[in-house]
Image (tube, rainbow, N blue to C red; front, side):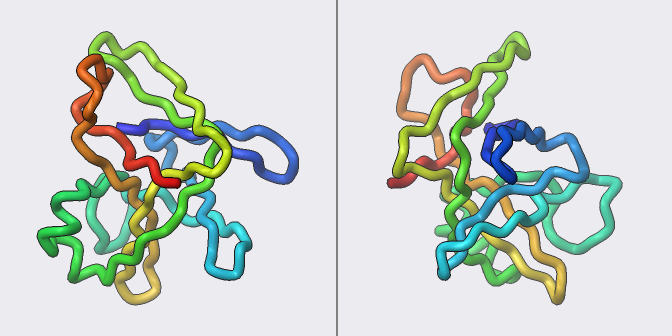
Length: 135
């Protein structure tokens, strides 16, 4: 379900994991700049946006996210991490030119990024939800 990502921040590789309440994701803006926005919301965090860090693609198409004025965004990372059924971490590299689709949700001034997920088409997938990879 994409529990962690790796990206370049100020010339250094940085790994960020969803459980960290300070986790931010790099999002490419329309002017080609990168902004770092909060990754989802955890139980201990104030706010009104949904709990969690993921948005099912099907639920977006069904309008479940409409009340939060969703906008698709490009999450620019070099790798993402999934855990298998035994909780072992596996890192997956994204080739140049690919990104993870994100959803930017708004509620007043509150803005958060959610990783868009799909059901994997791979038979040997390590999880039942997979980040939606775009190019």
